[in-house]
Image 1 (cartoon, helix red, strand yellow):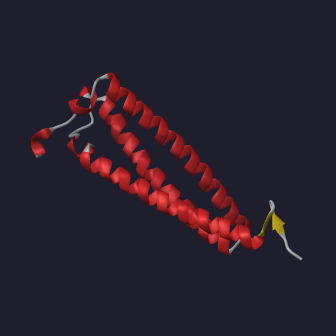
Image 2: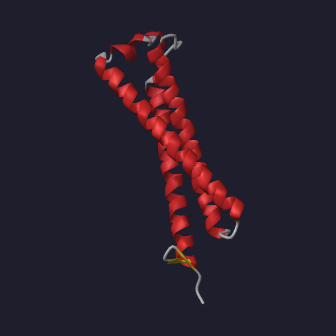
Length: 136
């Protein structure tokens, strides 16, 4: 007798959860490294974010790092869920962290589009206006 969840056997469902968790952990680390590179190459020259554009760049970067951490946490929770499948609180944890990942990713995408639009609209002058190049 084999229990089936959504057309998959329990063993297959565990494999899918394990692979999904590993992919989320890898994507979270890639996103985290990308945000760190952005912060290191672009935002380190922003002395004090006094205007709205520089503050927006900083907020989007902080959201990106937060999203990466939530994605990594969600991936780890999915990996743990693949081992302890009957645990209902763990299922709700994975579901809620997945919803948080989706909302944070949407927020990051909107912030990135706004940053790109502002940069192209001002031909890059808004990005460079808050920079202090005395730290070279």
